[in-house]
Amino acid sequence: MTQPATPVHTPAILGAGTRAPDFALNATPDQVLRLSELRGRPVILVFYPADWSPVCGDQVALYNEILPEFREYGAEILGISVDGVWCHAAFARDRHLHFPLLADFEPKGEVARMYGAYRAEEGTSERALFVLDGDGIIRWSYCAPIAVNPGADGILNALESLTSKSAPAKAESFRGDAAEMRP
Amino acid sequence: MSDGELTPPVSERDHAAGPPDAPVTLVEYGDYECPYCGMAYPIVKRAQQDLGNLLRFVFRNFPLAESHPHARLAAEAAEAAGAQGKFWEMHDMLYEHQDALEAEDLMGYAKSLGLDVPKFAHDLEAGTYTKRVRDDFRNGVRSGVNGTPTFFVNGSRYEGSWANEKAFIHALREAAQQLGRAAHTTADANG
Image 1 (cartoon, rainbow over the protein chains, first blue to last red):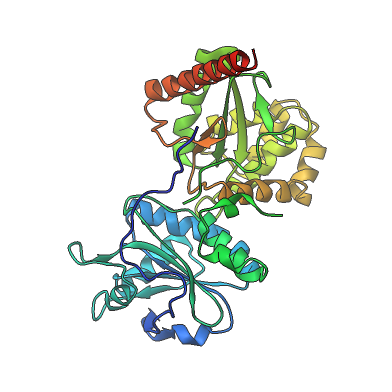
Image 2: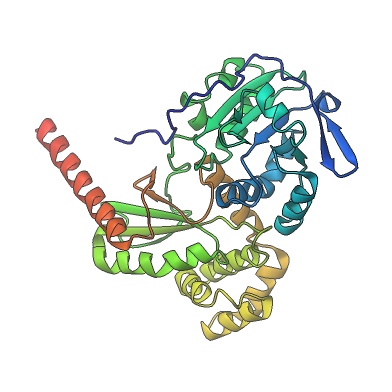
């Protein structure tokens, strides 16, 4: 009776099973965060087009609210856009964000390009999500239409399947019945 | 992202207005301090008036507390009032006074609704309904709620615009008719 809300949109972002390219980006004007430093725990990478835009604002506000659930899985969440560190600092302060925003600023969008999540025409990243396991392997990825807030259920399903060894396939086929099958 | 299906389905745990066997169940995930929910509030009211017994309306909490510092306590206040049989009265009071949601305001509303104020105050201070509100929020996230308000019509996320009142009410009427037809077809098939 109902059509799935999932949009048909398949840009060439890196998919499940791929090793996540390492990177080092500024989290604050004087702090650099390297992805490989987070080995040993799941990492959620949230590429989004721009600080301050309405959809991005809602999306980061939602993730900010869900941090306790993400932390239950021991996961770290990193926001990434092409905005500079000072812009990120102002945005994070305004929205009371409690997770790092990384500046993919110079060379512009280099990290987004490595993940196949750069929109060259607009000069911003896609609205793309990646869930990495503790070994730095992408276990789930998703690219939303630019104007659609993808929510967090896909991320939570992916984190759940990371921790349930009995169902490793779910990481790659999250769209099946996995969404409805939970204890 | 999600299939947009409401999880868990509406049950006795929910606050519902309207007949349990209404052909349309509208579920809102809302935040009492969210201005868009404030805009949706009178639209839902008019939809309830328009559809009458065809509609059952259910409200679940989705406070974005980092953006809206009063939202969580307000949600707990509605739950505490609900425990005294006045959920909808408090729900309406909160949406009609979105700019006055401090703790003392909530106490004032409890008093004006004739609640047992010491019990109400205790429930807020002790966080009696903190978990209940958080459970709503978690379920909402799992159902694909990505902001407020998010509506579900007969268990499926409503993707249209609620701000267009005519279209919204039309969609609800359509859902009522669809269900009517489906029931009719099933009856024929069983025939």
